[in-house]
Length: 75
Image (cartoon, rainbow, N blue to C red):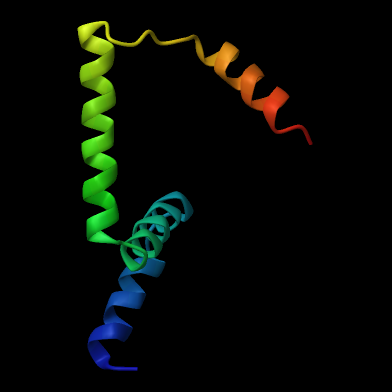
């Protein structure tokens, strides 16, 4: 292990458990980034938001959506 990596590890280990957990989540997420897929999700989210704001579609309460999903995918 390089001295830079060892120094970084020492700094990370001095963080609280909660901060190390947050850092771990960010590091793992950084390994799985698919730029094209992220852009497509952003476009879809913007489209859905515009549809909601324009009234083209109507949202449903979270509990109703969850009930529908549970019924559709039991178990």
